[in-house]
Length: 205
Ligand SMILES: [Zn+2]
Image 1 (cartoon, helix red, strand yellow):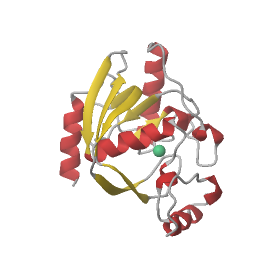
Image 2: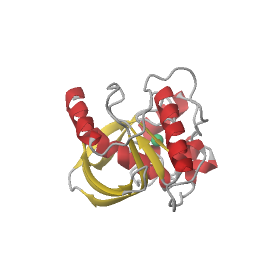
Image 3: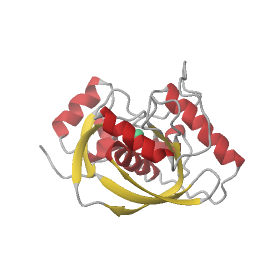
């Protein structure tokens, strides 16, 4: 599995950016990461109309915070900024692999195969639960230079992109968990309130 994921990330390298960030971050994330229960996580993000140095600087700060927090993805709403900007690095252990910076991402196609995989989120630390999602996607986005790009993704990368894109629509992965028992157990264990979940599943198991 790990090998498969690293191959994936190598593929994603060709779509990567020119932003160079040291991945071995120590200490606290430089930006505050908002947690489940904070309203800013529930708002829709706005498209970025101009990709300029301020956006690139924000992306660099988000990458530093993501690496410091040992995450593989971070969306701008998680640091309190409702803009359509994501940073992702599913290959954080490989210092040579470049991270992905996705601006105004749009999924243009979902594969028909679904799979279930355990997710976590820097905004809900300590909570890990299975979520069902399409296993492959196609997307378009702008890179950190504002250039339009397209890519296909599968495996961990596809999952991570979908998870982060949910943040842009005010959706958190716990909203998609079908097992309410598991969900409540995990949330209580970590001191979160189940009332802050906005379930988009009807299942009661
Ligand atoms: Zn998240």
